[in-house]
Image 1 (cartoon, rainbow, N blue to C red):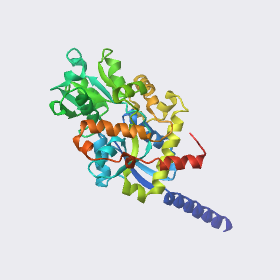
Image 2 (image 1 turned 135 degrees about the horizontal axis):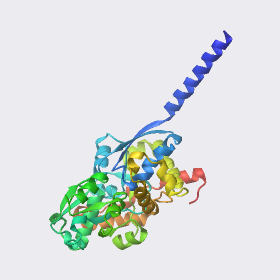
Image 3 (image 1 turned 120 degrees about the vertical axis):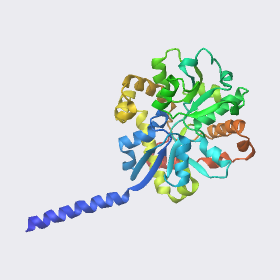
Image 4 (image 1 turned 120 degrees about the horizontal axis):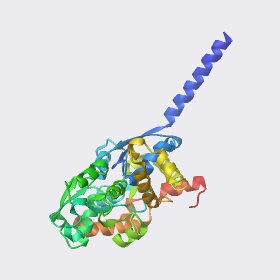
Length: 341
C-alpha cells in the first residue's frame, strides 16, 4: 500500500513539475521573412539549439515568402514578432506605425544584385536594368527597397523596372536559371548555389561583407533583427527579454563553433542535398552575423538616409530614427550574464 501511495505521489509530483514548466513557458509566434535564407539563420538555429526553451519560451516559427509578408502577419495579429530586416521599422515610421527592433543579428544586409545567367552578355551594369524584369523576394520587402535604392542611385526611375516576387530559396534560383527574370536581388545560400553552376555569374552589387556594405551605402547597414510593435514590446517585456537572451546565446554559439558544426544543427530541408554548396554559402555569411546584438545608431541613421533617397514619403516624414530600435534588452541581458562585450 505504501509503495502504491509513493508511486502515486511521485507521479503527481512529476505531473505538477511538468505542468509548472509548461505554465512558465510563454507562447510567442515569430514570422520569418524566408527561413531558408541564411540571413535569418540565427532565428532558426535558436530553435534547433533549444535556446528559446532555455529562456522560458514556447516559440512557433512561421516561415513566409518575404519580409513584407512577415510584417503583415504581425500587423494583422497572426504573429507576435518579425524576424526580418530592420529597414521595415524605418519605412513604417513614415506611416506613423510604431515598430521597434530590440535585438540585431545581422550587422550587414547580405543583399546581392545578380544578373540571370542567360542575360550576362547584355546586362553589365545597374544602368542596363532599365525596362528589365527584376526578381525580389516579395514586393515591399527589403530586397525590393534595395533594388529601388540602387536604381535611383544610378540615375534610373524605379518605376521603369518591372518588379516580380520570386521568393528567396529554390524558387528564386529556378526563376533565374529558367530566364523568367533578367536579374534578381538574392541572398545566400541562393547566390552561392547559382555561382556553383555558373562560374561567370555577374554580380552588380554585393553587401555580404563590411567592405561591400561600405561601398554600397557609405556606412554599416544593419540587416536582420527581431522587431515588433511598440505596444507588443511594452506589454510583453518578459517575453522580449527572453527572446533577446535566446538570440544573444545563439549568436555567441555561432561565433564559437565551426561552419560544419553550425550546418549540422540546421534542419535537413534547409541545408538541402548539396551540403558542399550550403557550407560554402554559410562560410560567406558568418561574417554578417552580429557579435553583440546591439543596434549601432550610425547604422540606423544609414537606413534612414537610404530610404530618404528612394522614398519621398520617408524623406518628408521627419522620422526620429532613435525610436525605431532599442538596445535596452541587450544591455539588460549583458548585465545579467556579466558579458561586457
